[in-house]
Length: 87
Image 1 (cartoon, one colour):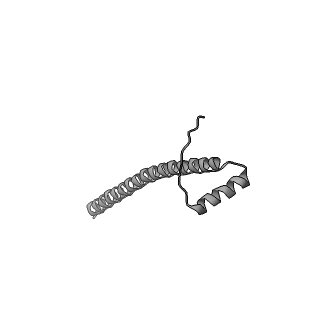
Image 2 (cartoon, rainbow, N blue to C red; image 1 turned 180 degrees about the vertical axis):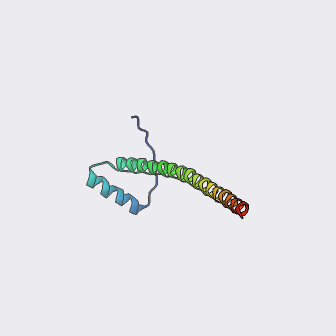
Image 3 (cartoon, rainbow, N blue to C red; image 1 turned 90 degrees about the horizontal axis):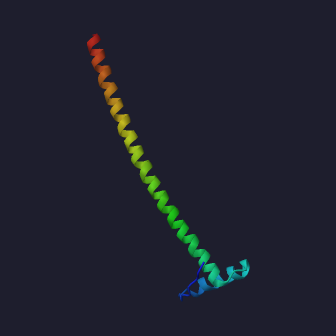
């Protein structure tokens, strides 16, 4: 993996937290920030997938509801017609 240097500005409290985690985990400050970015990007991708799945299932659910309503109406009309014919 090739690396590139960059300069970023962080709130001092966030930088202190980054340094504490780096010391605790044995990573460098850059390593902690890289891991945090990787996790953030992964979480965004997972949320995007979840949003798409929810949209598909919502559309499927709406389709199922419409199908159920159509079936209920069909059978209700056929039962009414059949009962009317029998009387």
